[in-house]
Image (cartoon, rainbow, N blue to C red; front, side):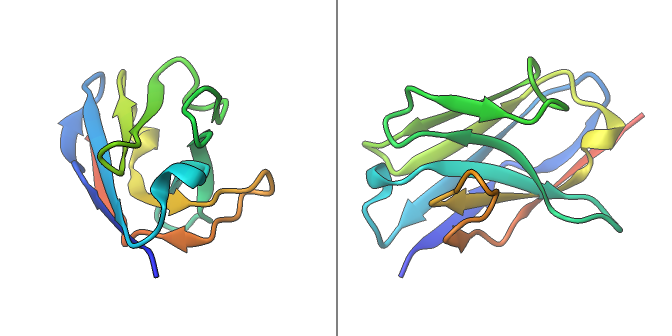
Length: 119
């Protein structure tokens, strides 16, 4: 059984930055593609970014490309999302996910962390 715990969400002004963290436990973290998803009020959950097990390959949604950076530290079982130049439309609950597939599904999810961007 895997446990994913996100942290780092909060309220920031547009143009600001936040760094989300996800602590993983219970499985061999380094074997899995990890990712971030988000869900805004009244909308479906959407893919944000993913990173390969080695960290050598990353993928981003067009809406965050150039502003967000996903990274991982397999020695600490940690996943990160550095978010810069934040916009009000980035407001959402952000979820950490393990074993992300190209179809946008995942084997396990965290409980989510709220990110709110004020204009």
